[in-house]
Length: 113
Image (cartoon, rainbow, N blue to C red; front, side, top):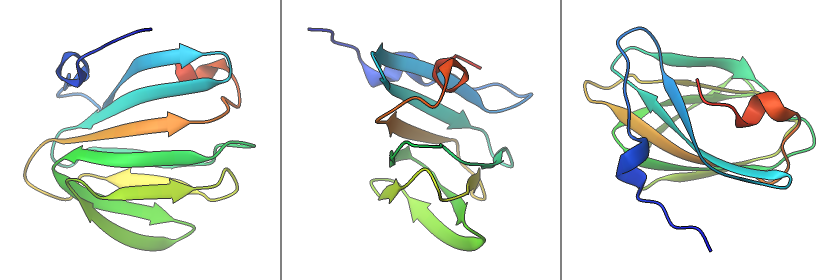
């Protein structure tokens, strides 16, 4: 068993969003993405992987295959690897997203940024 406290992974940077890996086991990874106001995650896909996202704090706008979806604290999203995903912190507060990939497309998806 492994146990962590999510607060240990809530780290923000003035320069860009941060990514902090919570777990990486076999082909699965869990990480926290942290965004200050105005920061964003560029559009990308997760080939051969499903993506589950929980908004831990704040609110922002996801763009999924060109469609904008506003999400706030405690909202969840499920995407397939074929869907293109982007995110922008469009609110005034910090945003943290809990992200789980059921299959890591390659090791770059499980690295801290």
